[in-house]
View 1 (cartoon, rainbow over the protein chains, first blue to last red):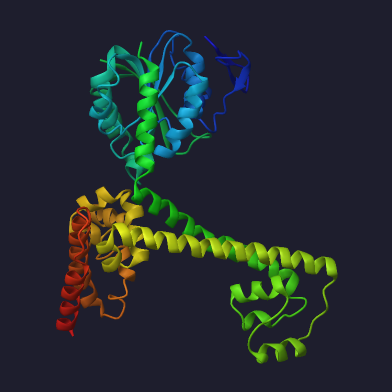
View 2: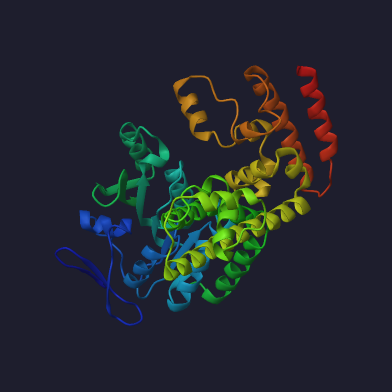
Length: 196
Length: 243
């Protein structure tokens, strides 16, 4: 693995130059999860689907970790997709797609293979529903899922809805680990799961 | 493994298609126009820190644009009253180096004001050309806000009239639904010039019929026809019946 975790900082080896690059947990929820003890079980030959790639801070580190696989980044916004396209010209294994994660039929024809891993970072009311739609179509059996659940996007009374949302999640996935990301990100839960 | 080159070309084409639509241009321009006045006011206050030493009472008689024009050129064109005020004002004379700074700063503010005016002209022209019904029925400022909240023109055209009436009041609307209280009656439509002078009871009634006409007009805009006069007459007739 290209992941290096020292006492108080996280690094990855760069894909092209193989230099150390720092991964800031205050900017990325996956890095915050590593700080909190959730090691994403990414192997070098995995194919990854990233929903909500935005401008590509986190996805650049994911593409460092999977040297033999491919990572597909999807986002709705055309402006952030411009930056992602520029980033993908440097990185061989990064594929940008403009599409709405709520309507996976839009990019069903483009992705013709199933993936091993789905990472989702979308602030919407139906976050878990979006994950289910995409995992039914694109995820292999026993594939992994890493979901960052933004509670304040679902309801203002975020403490009372946690159990309900987790029950929804457990209908189609098995929870391996879950943590709150409190010092790094407010009102977020990161969940690592496996498809049943 | 997926072939990357094909997909890359496809996404590039899709991005271009999405950015070239006129409604996205209008939304971006209106976002810039909303932010510019605060920038202008901040710079103006910093200018006043220096210039208030010279003429402390000058800003009462001039607008921001006239004030900056005075300091960038150093002369006043019209009205002798201001010259009298300048002569009788208490203050010190500024040094040459400070005067140069004030001219530069006021020129910058004038540039910002000019860009704002140019943007307003351009956005006006674009909306009038493409969405004439929305422009005349909802008045420009409200039209831009509706577009901004809806995200795109097609999405706005698919909204029913009741959604158009409540655009902008989503927070209080969903809060009321959860607590089983009364839902709000209007969103951004509240500031419409036709509704301002009405009483509270009539305001809600008119907001409903105005929103119905706006959503009708938007749907016709998709075909490019102009029925704004017909709809406007109907609204005015309804208002005259209320009184």
